[in-house]
Image 1 (cartoon, protein in one colour):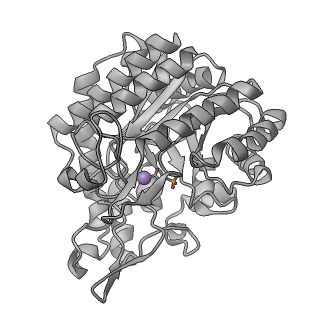
Image 2: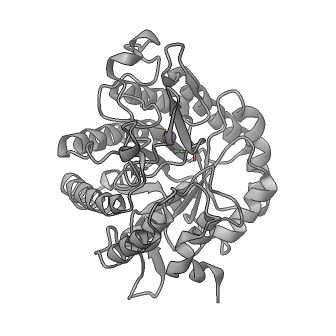
Length: 401
Ligand code: PEP
Ligand code: MN
């Protein structure tokens, strides 16, 4: 039997080799939850996934630009109609600015309606001598630093499903049906929690193809892209558009093997490579990667995540990013692709429609001292509304020059 099908078999769900999975306390309860998810209606349809794939094929061909953005970690409490609306509005405003300046259609994809699971660099967090499991996203545990909140609870996967379903209702209400490409709105998240993703995978009755129905585009994170890992295996078995995050240590030969596994037919739109190198490294590490991939694999879309390689701790202890570093990584991304004759295909951003103070810089500037004023993220720092708009204007200018 094909190994990617074996993974869809419940016993493999608890594959101890799968990276970044919570230490679920009760395997039987987890299995019940997967069964319950499997009995729910799909959240997105194969037809919508195919439509996004066609849009991303335009991105790969240099005929469109991708704007992908939203929270680092969505929370259940944050999924209010107003917050969702402000998030969609900021993305659409950015898309309009980018489209007008680039003279290209912009494909808008939210990090939304499923971004409830987080990979962590440390499995535990220590405070005042107490060691507890790290927060792994609302689909797993709670942010409060108590044993009760931090114990992974598989029933949270069902709450994630319901919150995603409610969010999608709101998104569909806000975006309506398709008129202009720019008004389409798609969803995406990191396909991290395999019981959730496998539980929501369906075989399309019309085409007999398998899809992840938890979101239109699913991506594999920098920490879970191991060639022989369970996440790559899962993604290889579904037909959605797939993203892969690539950090500064990504080995070009490994990336070629990943492309062979995830996109053996070299189908334009299937694979988006999301580079997150850091402003100080992108000009050195991106060129050899782009050259090797272009020489032997062709049709991928290249997207810049200027957030995850630029995170640091402020003197007063906040995880933050500098607006100027974020912009500089994007400038480097455009420089590299222009020099190589490849298309700088898009941006992958952590942002919110709220007036938070999580990233420093921008105008009006958030300073290190003012980070504490409205620091609300459950995980990584996001651009606020003003910073996001300023970034879109700057990138639009960059694209014209
Ligand atoms: C993220 O997108 O929030 C994330 C964890 O990214 P990466 O896999 O690139 O570290
Ligand atoms: Mn993040």
